[in-house]
Image (cartoon, rainbow, N blue to C red; front, top):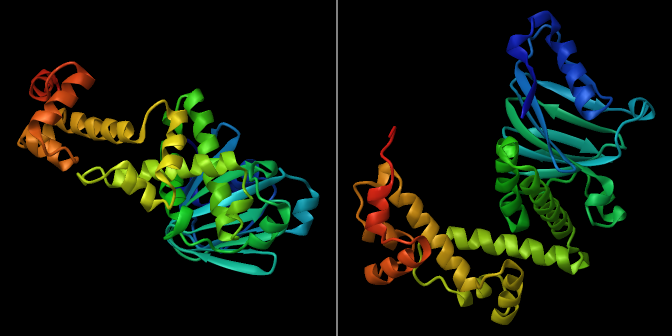
Length: 322
């Protein structure tokens, strides 16, 4: 991410105005209000993920940001923004509603209408800017959800929050083709999270619902790789779909559900075998940790996937600094 301002690198007397200039240049016409006698601390970073704007804000100085009717008349992008509170507490007010967001919570606001953000303590935020047409949720539904907190501890929001945080942290590492695909993933997850919170998930396009379900299945598999009883039937039951539907979902992935589980287990094993920090652990211990407790079976699978037995693969891995 490009660091647009690091307050500690700006003379104290100039920080408030410089911060305001950066906020307006990055987000559009806004008013920033703070105690001018308190030197501002914080930083703002920004990047682009395909058509999505991604920003990170970190500050420990109490202040507020306002989008007033007068500023709206001066123009600005027609965007929805999704705010993720990574840590700390932030207050969002729009349309006579107030959302107090704590770590992991989300909220949507409309940049074309007045709003207020209040930071009264140290916070870290991620802000995703989307074209208004990108969120495939009826405009009336979105209007009812602006300024409404979306708790990050349940439903699709529990999947979206960690992904958004990671995307904001790693956005500079993605290649253009990957960034474009990931932008679609992020948009789908946000659309489903908003629609789910409005109890209108069934109104989404079938393709969007299926893509989001697939993301949730992938996340579930990652979380349960160490369970030797993990199977397509277990995955289907956990997501309240039939086994037949789950298999159809994976047809677009050019693999099967069982094949995906096996691939992810082997990849985790391969990573640990190459990790010097795991050198004191036996091959069988590593395999069992990732749901492959039969040493002979694991050895056959690993050799078929990577061209050599696991012990030989481990010996061939370069030593640290080598």
